[in-house]
Length: 193
Image (cartoon, rainbow, N blue to C red):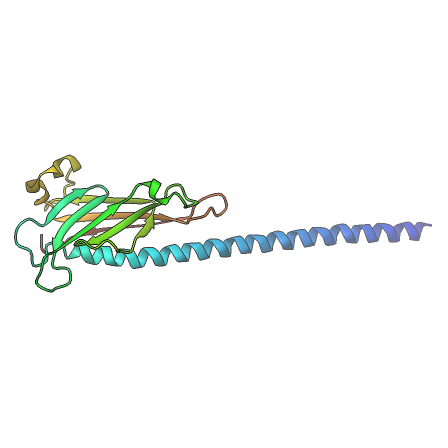
């Protein structure tokens, strides 16, 4: 009797330990899958931000290139409009960066998604970038921040000597109950202003 009972206890104990090992392996695998998905989404966002910020950086660096007179037409926290011979063809081009409201992204899972548009002259087919935050800050020749209320007139806009751009992008879907984000920030000093 005793050995029979001992055999049953060994068998039940083996099932319990085996079940715990299987649960631990399953939990570990789920953690690895979650990390892989998070990494994939982060890489996609990073590629998107890098390609878009290269264009923004290039454009703002060329503010005022081959332009005589007023260069920055509009300067606000989430919009900038300026002149430059961006395509080097001898003709002044108007470049505008602006942000739409969240209502333009009603089909997105992320309620903070907005669209950053780049408009060249009257072109309306610019490639949009889905972002959650955009901020332009403007500085004078001494590196002092220029208040946005001061930028309502052209003479104040003519004092702008550098532009700081901050962009934040988030994943379109929740990952571990949050939207993963990436930020890019750079102060650009155009040579021609």
